[in-house]
Length: 238
Image 1 (cartoon, rainbow, N blue to C red):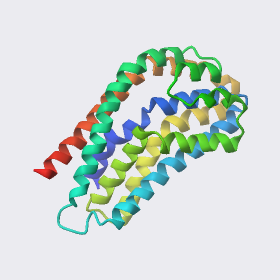
Image 2: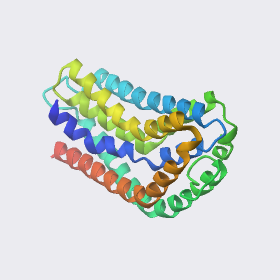
Image 3: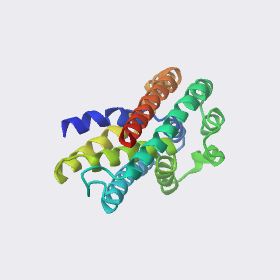
Image 4: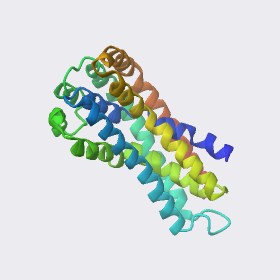
């Protein structure tokens, strides 16, 4: 179980440093209903993360990744595909991230956030008018429909399914992975809920730090995760 947990550390950090989720969270916390919408966004994010982990562990079980002495050949294909996707995402994040995250650091309204992050849907400019139900759906969608975050969840589900651990141990590791992946959303939301308007100065400082560092850290982690998946996929084919 310890070996499995160590294997999943870079994958979990790939979720933690997701620029897309952080940009959307900034827009939510700048909205008029920051507290209630922040909680709704957090719950949606948790559902998306846990839902994908559970769904793909179930699917990998149905397709029998442990039914034979060695994983089926399609597992290597999945790893090669996800590795290539994440390596490409690392290049894109690094090249595009600095410019847009710098603009994010000075955003003061949801519309400014959307302008700083053109990869976000245009309707995010109206997040200030969102009610909790719509913000909840935003949290779910930005995890499930984001190929980078979804790929990390699928990789985690695959590694857990392939590990020779008990059902209880697999559940503990799944819960720990979900908890770590939720931290970057949960901490700012809880801080805003507790502190209200007084939370703004610290959030501004955190946002400035994110604008300066997140794109480099996220690109490096995605490259590491992608390289590991490519190495595992190629090794299994040889």
